[in-house]
Image 1: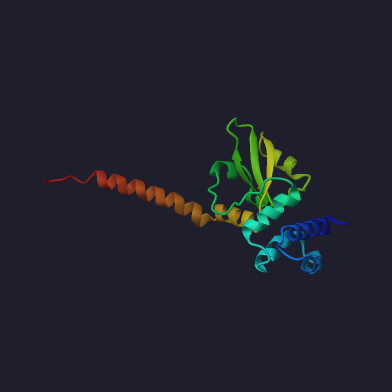
Image 2 (image 1 turned 180 degrees about the horizontal axis):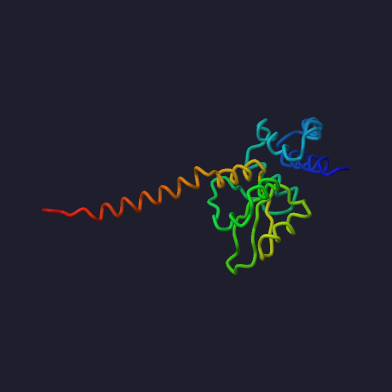
Length: 177
């Protein structure tokens, strides 16, 4: 049995156990999922409104046996993200979340925690012990794209420079009253 079928089967089993679909619907769902690329299973479930984000995160947590994390709306540490090339993050659907208080464990959100090489690959960029949590592929890739969007990055810098210029200009105003 290949990995795609295994993940698909586990997703369907979790959907049935969580009463998202009936056993009969689960059988039909498995047939459809088996025809999909593993990277598109999450998208299919969301796009077809079979599950919502919260439920999908619970399913992923259940099938992989690790914590899940919703990256939507999270403000990522810019310096930490910049350690990794954009292509590396996108191709592996992973994004660094944070470094623990002691500064020795890096938590990354990945869409495929069963990728046996991912920890070694992340370790090529950082000296931390790597902790993995699972997230939704689409959301991870959207967060990476948003972060690396030149207009957003430049816009943030331009906005900061404009605020500093405005502050300087305001300080030059003399009250003649």
